[in-house]
Length: 280
Image 1 (cartoon, rainbow, N blue to C red):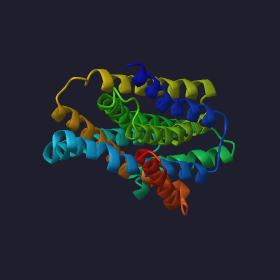
Image 2 (tube, one colour; image 1 turned 180 degrees about the vertical axis):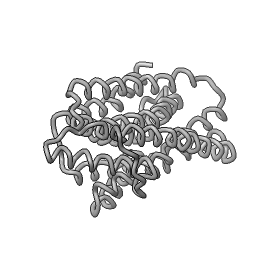
Image 3 (tube, helix red, strand yellow; image 1 turned 30 degrees about the vertical axis):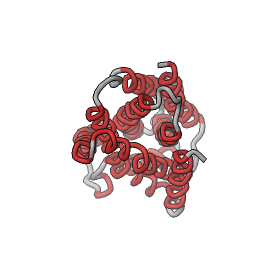
Image 4 (spheres, rainbow, N blue to C red; image 1 turned 90 degrees about the vertical axis):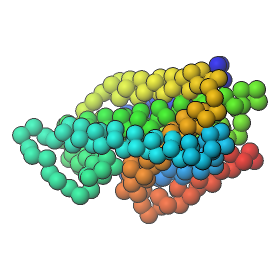
């Protein structure tokens, strides 16, 4: 149990670090894009070489495939609801919501609203409700894909309870840390641009870190002792949610902010995570 607590604290601490940094520093857009692209690469590697293969080994292909699609579908359904919340929250009072092609997904909405917030800040005008909306959207997205990610991390510790943290668990931990940091930083930047205080932003991201730490503990404690099929399904479910978040949120946002070097950063993240998983 102590291992699960420590691992959860390490992985979720990136939210606190990112929240603090974003509250006091406003980096260029391409910097946050590169961070997000690197994080995407680490998650792709962890999903392809750790999460899903282990799910198949435990539950077999049919159950693992079912878990993958259920996890992805769950993310899509909740994400669609969040899209409507972001759109209504970002709308200025007395204005009609403008229909923009780039805002048809959460990633597009976040990119469009962040651009507006940054332009407003550059002109020394308050960020307004648009900035608050993008900050809370990122917070919701981190929580939505972070809960299954961290639960999967706790589950991965079950099989290695006697051996300690394996290379696979370490790779997944690194991927989670790498993805949490830039999302928290971008979210805190947006909140500050909307005239929220540093204390407000840091408190929210710290609360998210506590929630995701609990998810690791729940994954380790609540699923300990369940049969391998259920365990494999849970891992695949987490993998599906991670895959959906990559396609819908992380990678589009990384491309929007970090091009033309986002592809190279993604490749580097993939390589680093793979090397960690192989244990050399």
